Length: 130
Image (cartoon, rainbow, N blue to C red):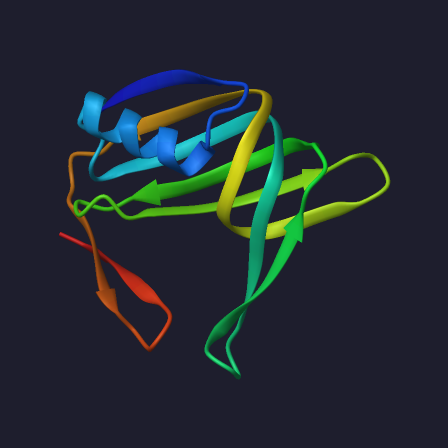
């Protein structure tokens, strides 16, 4: 196992840049240990199990990325949860989209096992460890 730490600069689409890093560093089947920084144009969601769908929230203004963690499957699926806030408000949940507003620092741990995803219902793909 090895750790890869990267910085993503202002103006970049966070999920898109994570995808590039995953390909460049061969980080399929990795754990996202943590990330901090600042983001805007955020799409974040909370899963509503009774409806089997996400309730999504859109936040345009810049917020601190207080915490961010998740994983990357062998197929390259990024599953990322985060907490963002500005001192008065806090949002948390599954991160669908965001733009870096200052910078983001993020750490990956490449795993010795294979992480895969399989459909659980119409919305979710559960983690399978091989």
